[in-house]
Image (cartoon, rainbow, N blue to C red; front, side):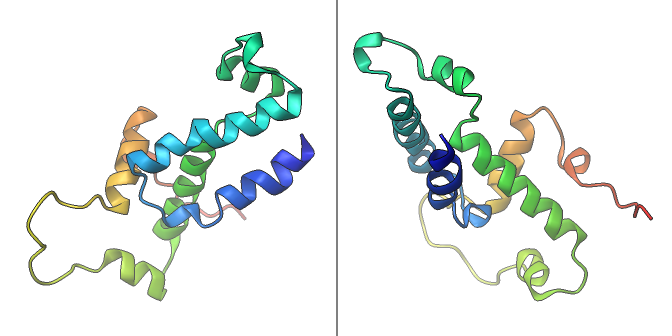
Length: 133
């Protein structure tokens, strides 16, 4: 299980803070994480156990949940940044028209969806601005 937590998870979610969560990425979660967790416990398909049961038994979060936590942590870091180029890029408004068709999903849309799924608003999700001394 230590290989799962120290090698597999970090490799799979490297750089996930800036990902836009599409259906393709959300569908990868059960395929990758649950296969590894079942292999590490020697559970076979013949045992007919649900992936959620195996995760509870191993005390492991889903990979999608870990990705969302990383993205919310990065959102909090962006909110707290002052005069750093990264924040400038995030706040920049693009000029011109977008191409025809369905609007592409943005990172801000992803954050709004994550926050709504957790029953919060963007203002409630912002970290406290007070500094502890």
